[in-house]
Image (cartoon, rainbow, N blue to C red; front, side):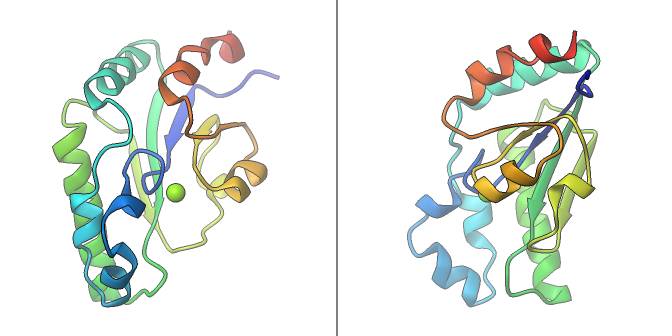
Length: 150
Ligand SMILES: [Mg+2]
């Protein structure tokens, strides 16, 4: 079965080192979205951006699928969403994402898109309907995608 040419990236713990931000959990529990914006990249962003723009030229769709914080309310959700969009703008400015899904915590990612998923959470990978990769080798794994699509 051919895999759809769509690449989906999680953010927290996958591209963004949220859990490496000091006191990240205390911030989030206090309704402060700062760690989402200050998280350091986990991948060499220049390399990733170049690869993703190449993938787009090869006809791939590029999405982000990321959850809002556990403690959700409309005002905080808006701040978290903006923080994540700012992070993407700062670190992957040249990449034009087809969809940026920032959705309620726990939303099944397989209901939002198909194709390939990069995600640090094992349950998201298990439930995914396409091909799911962990986050240990993102750049190298990206190079293998055409093995599945062609
Ligand atoms: Mg994650």
